[in-house]
Image (cartoon, rainbow, N blue to C red):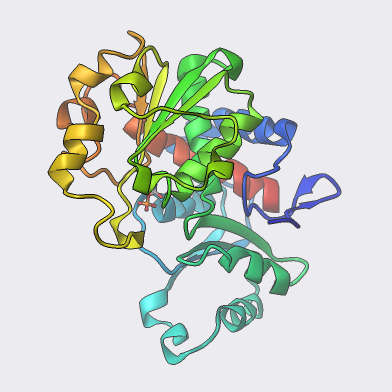
Length: 313
Ligand code: CP
């Protein structure tokens, strides 16, 4: 996906693939600086005054939609949450016509979640020059702000030198836009070692795993790593039968306290949410001291503020 940079600046945020490292690092640094305003402060309230952001979500979301709304409000923008279920898309209006209709009402930025991998590229080709687009999760391909908030969370715990990091990505990589965005970002930041572990049926094409080490057994994948990045089983995108049973999946791939004990003593655990407890993660890990799940959520507001500011500020 191209066309997200103009004159070296972010025009849309469609993907982390190919995003230059200095730009990615500037977004992370800005998000870190905005954290007090993301959660409690009011200092940023004037930054996007007079701007309008529409959340255009065609798939369910708790974290991404709410944090984009909070991010836009905390920057002072007007926010509209488009209700796809009550909209004229139900009468057959196309995505492009929906975009142009809302553009005509003076909307500056669209935050879009859609089931189609290509949705954001299609919108980018049709958007007016002044419109900004943010990918809030498209198909199996991209979830760039999740990738950014995961990197911010890792940096906060492990420092900025990713070349020292050993990371294991465990779970349904094949259907995961989070995994793809994390992989783009981890590679761009020069991560020392990236291991991937999944049942064969849940692995993507080998080309998508360039630079990663594929490990069969989860015990071997997590051994000695600094961070375990778990992925949700994306049952809504999966043909039946790819996983024999949820119990078998937990037995073979679930992160339990016993498995986590094989990682480095100060290893951290990330999960983008929503979690399938007892499927990819045990309760004791999800709620344990090494879990960064809620820190990821908090960072989501700051990252989305940094992105909206970069696009509209
Ligand atoms: N991680 C994530 O995208 O969560 P939501 O689907 O709740 O937005």
